Length: 420
Image 1 (cartoon, rainbow, N blue to C red):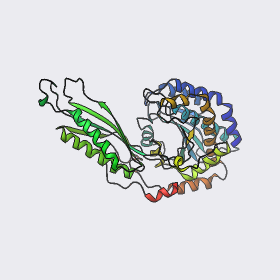
Image 2: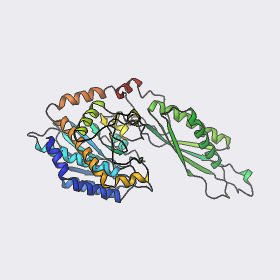
Image 3: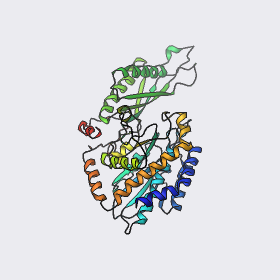
Image 4: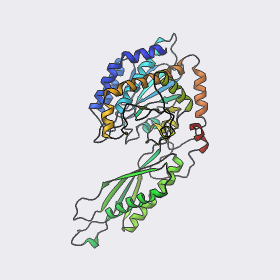
């Protein structure tokens, strides 16, 4: 079974590269990934998968092969790009690795005397700005799924990366317009409120814990210099290692916004649009993935500065609270950070292909081991570990993070011992 999976991926390497290159050359923003959606679904249909296009979301899809008699495994594919800088997070490579892994698992299932289990390739739009996997959770896809996985390009190889919870928030300040030269005293300057909020949050960083990240941009600063701005807006990403800590940081940032509004004689609307949970890597699943990756030539660093380096945020964190999951990072031959123009170049370079095919094989081999005779013990260990993950009603969609921060303990500190 394992040989069948690896051989299939090797045989499809040219086609997989062409898919990745086509997505890279045609970057599409979240919820607008029409070309990528059609390209991926068309290829998977030709490869014999049962494909449901526009699944839950217009540019989402579900491709499957297998039966109900065994583990149900989901492999994630992302394919949205970033504004202005294209595929600076390498989602073209994530799609390639996910599709490649799916091809390998399908070949392994076909080689079985009696097919056991099913593999899904789930196309998840808008990871960058739209919480696509959250919509898949709320739409019910993960009911009945045993494990979920994906990989992500980065400057490093890390099987259990430390991602952070993220609460994107919009602070919209409302004032009163007036002529800035003739009668400025009759206005209430919303931009002043926004600037004071920005400065207050920047000053507050000194009191934030080392694992907190807060960064924002002005999305509206007024129309013209001779009009006192009656509306101004800031968009912030507020991040912390755990959801519990995130709630405390959110309260402090909200206080900065409210105080700034009062000081400028304005009002403020606070809107939390989405919520990205921290990834809870399933260590049993990650260890098997790492062994498979190492057997293919990967060398994982042991330097704590790399292994414990804080990453970004992803809606795969939400999935990890719903089913046992992994989200390994893998190097593509560049030291440039994600979300840089240099990383965009690297994700389209030939040097990224070898590592990406290794990832496809490592995921496929991990899936095959779950589907093989004897995989029941591994799956039990994975699920026993997952049973220790505390419930997160925001990640599961039972409660909404939008508009309010509720007093609920979401993370047990003793679970962090699994990362040690």
